[in-house]
Image (cartoon, rainbow, N blue to C red; front, side, top):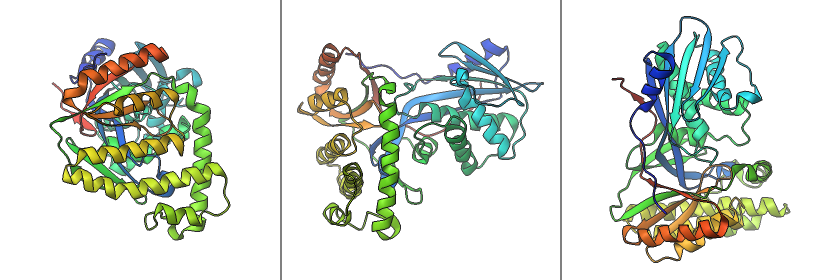
Amino acid sequence: MEKRGLESNLVVVDYHNEEYFESPQAVVSAPGVGFILGEHSEFCNGMAIGFGLPLRTYVAVSRRSDSSLRFFAADLQERKRSTLSNLKFKREDRWANYLKGILLGLANAGCPLGGLNITFHGTIPRNKGLFSSGSLCLAAAKATAEAMGYDLTDPQLIQAVLFAEKSFVQSPYVSPLEIYLSLYSRKGHLLLIDQRNFSMEYLEISFPEISLILIDSQVPQSDFLEDLQERVEVCNEASLVIRQQIPGGDLRALSPKEFRGILGEVSESVRRISIHGANESARYNELLTQLKSGNYELAGKILNHSQEDLRDLFEVSCPEIDWITKHTVELRGVLCTRLTGVGIASCALTFYEKSVENSLLSRLDEYERIFGFHPEVYPIHLAGGMEVHRLP
């Protein structure tokens, strides 16, 4: 098993030039996002810890002299067309619906648009819970605004992305949490987000003797769609129970044991999910303490407990991820392996000492022989957020 490299040059400019015979007027990129805690605690206003991935979506935009819209997905070598007067959802347009949703969201926000040529290229694995579609929306919104000369505020950008994903495309699981991470992440830092009011704090962190990889299990995301909708419904029910039982719906003042005592008569699924939220809240401060003190071994144990909850209580894991988790963390020198991604994801993050890398990658060769999926492995670091690129 080998690790994949990460592309960083602006090849999207070349793609745009070749497709439209003109240079873009704006190029923006936005990262995919990874989480190490709390992404499944929005229903109880929990705390989340995440970072920008070094995997990004790049969007190039140039203005046209008419009202036509041309979209080019460079990685897929696919093209779609539309007009400003026909920004409607069409199932057959697939990925282009996200771009149409963004343009309609900008128009609704009071940003008149003209015809546009839009090209995008990305390195984020699609349909894996890593914010691939969201990063496209975010980068497209900013690039379009730059090309048109509009100075959009961050709240306007966030609302445009939410409109495109939630209202226009009607994605089953949309969280502002991912947008904040993709927009505001800072290189070499974890971003701490309070989901009660979306206030943020940065934690600078360095672990020179520890490496981080993203493991894409290659389990098809379509296998999870029905489970995802069920999870959303249970979270909504749990949120209502928590608000009824706790003033302000805030779990942070209660220990998990105290919370178990006040749940009352609820369904078993609501009970499990609610306890997961309480456990994540309790883990947050403990994890921060260990990270700030540089005790990464103990921090890894906390994150492994979080993964156990994701498997047993929140039930967003799968046999393939369970196997990867079990057979990586049993290696001495592997600190933790944990699911990452909002919704029901099929990727995991592994923190490990560099000396055990060969043994770790060999374990993933075993995974392929057992399950038949060839896992993709990406070297990861704590990357920056959305970036407006200077054109050559």
